[in-house]
Length: 80
Image (cartoon, rainbow, N blue to C red):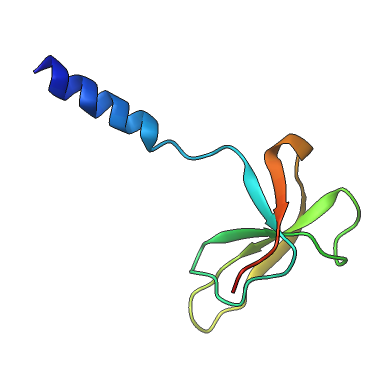
């Protein structure tokens, strides 16, 4: 029983999300409803990134410029 409980507790630690956010260089073509992507482009002032939230069919995506702490972000290229 102790082995089972310790295995369950350890599995919860493996499921914790990462604290770092990935910043894309271009907006993704496909984005699931309510999924969030951070994009670094020229439409936002320096020090800010665009937060793109996916929408359900027939509605437009939400876009807003937000600040992102440097230690939380990593810049990568978008892969279609």
